[in-house]
Image (cartoon, rainbow, N blue to C red):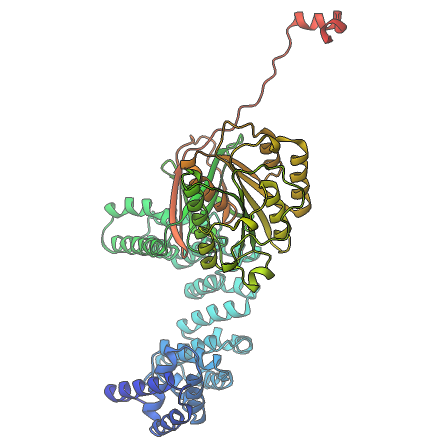
Amino acid sequence: MGTEPSKLEACAQEISRLVETFSGQEQANKQSLQQLAGNSGIFCAAGIRVLAAGPVSSGLRYLVQLLTKNRVLTVGLLDPKTCTTTEAVAACRVAVESGTQLISALEIALTQALQASSSSQNSARILRILDLLAASGAQSSWNSFQLELMAYPDKMVRSKAALLIGRNVRNLAWIGRRLVDRDPRVQASAVEALWGNRDPEAQALLAAAMKSKNNRVAANAALGLYRISDSRAVPALLEMMCHPDPVFRLSALWAIGQTEDSRFLPALQSQFQASEGKTRLAIAGAMSRIRRRERHAATRGPLQFHGLRAVLEPEGRRRLTFALSGDGDLGGLTRAEFALWEGQQIVDNYEVQSVSNPAVIIAGFVTPQFSSDGEPCAPALLNGLNRCLALKRPGDLWRIDRYPAESSAAEPEGSGMSVLPYDDAVVTAEVKMRHGCLADPGLIAKLIPIATPADRLAPGLVAAVERQCQALTKHSGKRHLFVFLHDMDHELTREPVIARLKSLARDSSIVFHAICHDAAAPWGAFQEFFLSNPEGSFEEAAPSALEEKLAESYAQLLNRYEVSYSLPPAAEPGSVLIKVSSQQGAGQAEFALAAPAPPIVIPAPSPAIEEALEAEPAAISS
């Protein structure tokens, strides 16, 4: 089916044009494609090239129908003169996604190839058919051809079969038997078939294979353990990188490059200067992959660490807690996307846990509305809300209630309960249906700087809180309410007010967060209320720090993580560096560990005091 490149290119371009404009002029394009199909050789090769470029569309579906109707699709996919294996596999996926069944035809071709005399050409055909079967989603085929494939004389065929059968059948006993095959290629492929399998038995097979005397088997096993976050993988790869046998070193460097993990960079940089030849090139290649991933992660935007706390626990275990913010949801980062050092020592055995990352957050904000533009807290509060908005996830809901900064907190109970707290310009039917809770960041951004009309303001702080609680409980999700405490009012310290707030918190399942700028005020009872829930917070901030405090408090609601690890008992605590490199962005933070508080030691009473206690207990107790 070989064709002239110029004719093939021209035909592919015309088919691509007809496919792209198919939905707008279906009948005319169908006729044009049918005319092109008259030259079956060029049409098949050009059509497969267009299919490989995808994605599925109505035009591509019709193209698949034509190729199938003319009985050239399977023939073309199997012919190396028509297309490369890469093009064939991509086109096969698109054809299957379009609803075309290719498995039966491929199974017939495989049966014929296995029955033919062994040759390099026939082996290449079998390998191509196996790739196409894998792309077509075949499942039962692997059991049907298992014995014939594993008995085939060609090593490459047996190796490919071990990988595809092991990956698709997922029979751990079968894979285990391949790990003692006489051919190391088969062993290495069987190990690769285990990648991503978190079954304890699969993990045990990988750990055993990591001790193999074959470099490819050992490196594949280490990489497999790395991909399921097994702590043994990193030290094993570092050790293999220094193996006396150069083939082991090269395999380790290949596996390290595949991890794209920046934890390996210091070791690679150290080895680079002392290496030469193929090893030096392999080190350079591994470092290039890691740095390329770091650069790519950086282009997705910076990640910021918030509320970072690092504690050295009494038994020596380190525990870090923090929240991340960036572009999008960061709640699903994996262990492999974190890298850790303490002092100059790489941390390879650590645990990463996502902490309290709810699917939906319902956030309320209660803020004062200032009558004077000269109030220093006003711009800081608006900037803080905008910074929080930048962190908001698309599905989360917000509601903002304001109360007059100059009013008393002792407003009548239940006042202003049903009023939406916005100007009519933003009160749409959807806003009413959601009880003033908004998801659209564009609408919220318009709302933040707009003053609330006087008749929509809550009479006071407690009424605003009550109004918020009533609205937030209409929605399902994790509920948080941020309350900005302005000038202290003695009414707020009255027990009935505190009792009313406690009742609201209890009945609405809302976590309260307070930010106050008057640190000298007697906020004691209020502070106790806000901190009564372990998730709640109470922050004091000068006007200049208000913006940062509000953004920091909000950031800690989502994308929270806990990282814990241990170092050898003799290790001295040092500065800790943590890096994140992911598809969502990259960032790092460095900090010092805080030692645990020393235990309180109560000294034993002296003999004189003990005698006094025994002699005159009544006098001492009084």
